[in-house]
Image 1 (cartoon, one colour):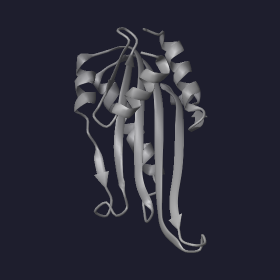
Image 2 (cartoon, rainbow, N blue to C red; image 1 turned 90 degrees about the vertical axis):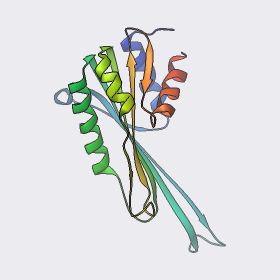
Image 3 (tube, rainbow, N blue to C red; image 1 turned 60 degrees about the vertical axis):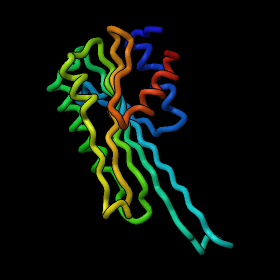
Image 4 (cartoon, rainbow, N blue to C red; image 1 turned 120 degrees about the vertical axis):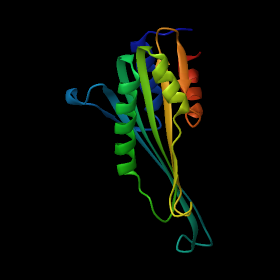
Length: 168
């Protein structure tokens, strides 16, 4: 089922509300619609909380963009901006397990070049030989022209989430 861009964005925003802290963008931040943050902490302890066996923190920084036509240049610019902002917010250190920086592009149409670049894009970074966790870049496009959702390899969970939200 094909959705209009406004409907797809509204459904996606509503689906994110229970899980993420959402910050609406301001006019000068266009084409950014909103940015989301998610923080999770898991831990195990013995007898009392004073004897902590391990702690694992996971976080995700999601950026939703609306662009009329996604070109390769615009894709590269927005992807780099999302990565730089998300990487800057990441809390890397002891107890850090993973960070996901996610960029979702809602567009009326996109070029073949942009799709090829998105599919090829792979960014996986480890910290201190993975003792301090890793960071992955997840990317997804919702193309209103054909109703398709396109993701990179790491972005498949995001694509599945969007499909579920839009009931595709």
